[in-house]
Length: 313
Image (cartoon, rainbow, N blue to C red; front, top):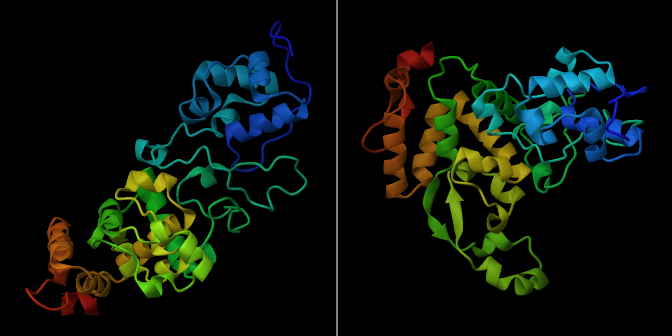
């Protein structure tokens, strides 16, 4: 394709619902048997495609609109133009999770905007679990209703549309990612699923100390879904962008459980943590809103519990 003239493209495949700009332009390039770089040279947009999708420039959107006969508003809708900084920080633009139903009849599977979010596990149209790499252990995390509820909480928080909940969502996730005790090597029963050959072959890796996140106390099935030596749970929310899908899915489940029943969940956390971790948890809870402090009684010893007036409300 020549740069001169920047002639409009005669035939342009329409974008699917919720498709990302980078995905759509890649499918347009496929239609003309050229690379995305060659299409860019012809159309004339200047920014790298991922950056254009993240921080779109008006002039570039106009060039694409002129070449494809689509209005600028529709082109802009395929970008993250209105996303908050927090939402942008949780995007996984380089990942290729796709919906099999949306891909039916297409030579290249479209990538959805919702699937770029670190907690976008389902197609918004077909409600099917997205298909992609790194899904090991996901089938053993069966609490889908909690995962969907936690995903909604995380998306609202990232978009800045959360209501005045008793527990701040960001702080709740940080609690789940924090450690309950110092790192320890895997216990024998935690390696029970491995064959003798695997144990011998990976003896050095399996003897390393593993971090023990609070997440496993709130979502105990997580340790069954993903061996402790392979979990690699990050220490902060930003690290979840590159975490295993099962880790992110378990965080969504854990968040929903904590929000729904804070007193028994916090009791479980305190019971399963060492003294240093319990002190950190108590300090964190002490910074939560006063409405939560009034509802939760934290005795010096024993299990926390909701005040009776709150329980009967």
